[in-house]
Image (cartoon, rainbow, N blue to C red):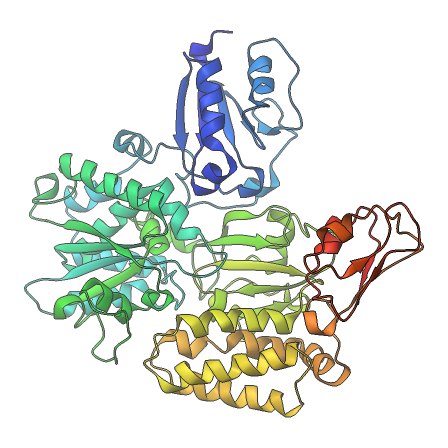
Length: 592
């Protein structure tokens, strides 16, 4: 077959690049120099990177995963008629109707509809996939700002940044505020551990996010905008900056867009990685050149924001939904989801899940359906124990509540929050006390320090959790944690402090037995907390290979190679680092 007939699409989002997509791209280019080869963002299947799709013609396509520069030749040989189909690499194909990919097949993609399907650096690609239809509908078909806001109201779209505030209501406040100048900000300051929703949208479909900004700016009457993107997302910054440049050259951004009276310009502002700058007023302070610290509200940003001008801040996912809603109608968007939570939601699946990555599902699916139908269940084979929703500001939902539907009301009822969309999955090898300590350590470090209870209270909570994990806790510590949590939530100015205690409160609510076990029995059921566990060698199965001795960083292991029964661990020297467990070939290290 002639290579010129092939279209080869290589996934080159940040996850793909980390997995070696450039090597795979170069291998295809070297072996098939005449093929139509290009890169796209990540379609979300991070667990199968590097990904590549081969389109033979309009009706025939093949999606491959786990590609490396070494096994690319297997794929090429098959399509050139010189080898067998590499089934171990094939994910799905148009030839095999029986092979339906559960990961993609159980999703409903609106915000992510273009990601992985177009070249994010190409304005033409975006236009060919229906880009700028929303902008044309607004500017050329004569939709008024009020009609745009009404359409968003009909859609039921709520802010996807975490709070879930109705988008139309936010816009209405800014629309009704009289001012000579208004601002629209895209909040791409994604800081939750394990979250990468905004990054993938900015990298993989920047023109869609930009069109969403234009829709929002038109609705509120903004003439200037900022895209606030974390500097740790260099590819997102690069692709979005190019999108701004290309849209400006094409007359889709800047003065008199599409020949109308509407003008709007956008600048990229790189954030320095402060988690607190995800909060609206702290983000505004950062844009103004001040230290990112929250301000007292009211006045709210919709009335007095950037440079004291009315300002609306929408996160990346919220903006990504807007062009689709304008084109298809708010009623169509509202047909997905539940009574209080319309549309779809993007989640970053991470942790002990077999098919980790980026997913978009209709609101109303249960947590269990997402984990099993989309995520494929436990990666380790161990029972799933809990899911952390909403990042460090969220909470842990135990397995017994996995049938909870994904909606703002239902998730909040568990004590967790929807958040921006992080979904960290844990099996029974996770210590919930240690997990609470991890998240509290994160929020304590990220506190701006403005509020006393947030600044000092989170430190005291972390100290208590550390004592409990070290086996030095007392039962009164549980009451102290709950008391501190209530005071921090009530006394903090912004969402960081108000939600910081959530991981502790939810683990206390659902896994209190683990706290009691650490305090009274001095044991960590998950065998995670180093000062509460011991490592011993099981003589009956040890083969005396000496790998554990070679790997021990503190020389706590003695024994003679190939002499059975001689290997032992000195408990006084052992630091319980777990290195011996990592290197042992026959599972002869007992941890308890």
